[in-house]
Length: 190
Image (cartoon, rainbow, N blue to C red; front, side, top):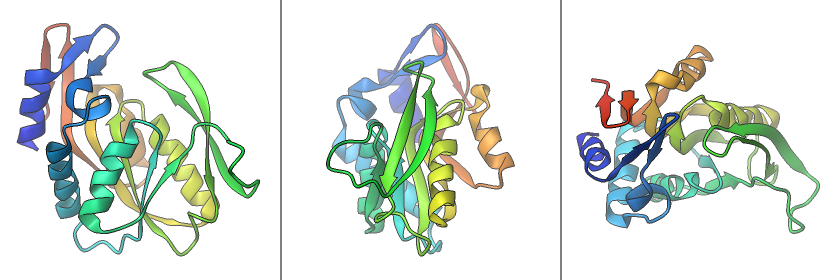
């Protein structure tokens, strides 16, 4: 998605350690019209797939997941990073290491919301090492749900997560795929 690449170059900031800050439009302040365009692009990429549900992880994945769900007219489920008192004990669970936060979270989804009759599209804002998507795949496996694929706003191809997910036989579509980053530049894959 050339528009996303241009927006990253205009508004993104690169920090040491392979961190790309896109808080001005993607994951702190949300450019809603642009996010909805991203949802339409994901819908185009997965047209014809019998998807019944969008699955993401809180919190930065929610905006992208919502835009995709709205474009496709489907429900969205998000995995919570902590079990709260308003969740039953009937949960699907996985552990996910966050590259950005350098911590491990236990993610949970009620198995009332993810079942063996679902065909899931996994959605997230970033794909770096692949940990979040692997955790979401584990939840789908526990539920017996089928996975149509995964769509991410930004894949940092140089960190290998996309390759890891693709090696599992999962279709991955990135709206923008970064080949390399340095302190003063971002290079996109063709």
